[in-house]
Image (tube, rainbow, N blue to C red):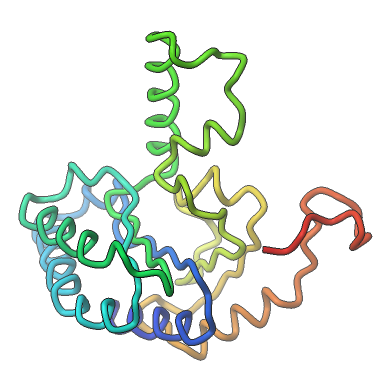
Length: 212
């Protein structure tokens, strides 16, 4: 049912011309779940990647991944790598899966990369900007999210895109992810459309940044 929800949301986003969609599929914390459950989730991931590749190619959807991919089982990594490579040339939409992902872990890895660069004399600490830091994140090259949808009645972001979501709008729904579909997605988008995004500025449209 979770895979069904993925299909419904991806199809709806594609029909609406939404260029980027990111799904939090498996967090680093999820490794702490019972072994049988983790193995089942990894098996479902492999099944999803193999079954959906023809659709991704047909609709010219590029698959992207964020997270500590090295932690995934070898077979899952291989299938994931093949799917990412096969869809690399697609440009209609980018579907990103967060796998073995955690926002704090991503920020720490980016900080380590910059620290290593500084130790090697390639980066001067005074030259580190938000833009440079962002370029070391898993989402480098992607725009920050405009909207984050949190399902299941939870009122927290659960370590998801902590840096990138600084000015995202949040929509919370009681609907569980397996029951989430096109109607719920459209409802969240409708609520988002009523928000006035000021990015810390005044309500004067003339002082607002250009819309993406």
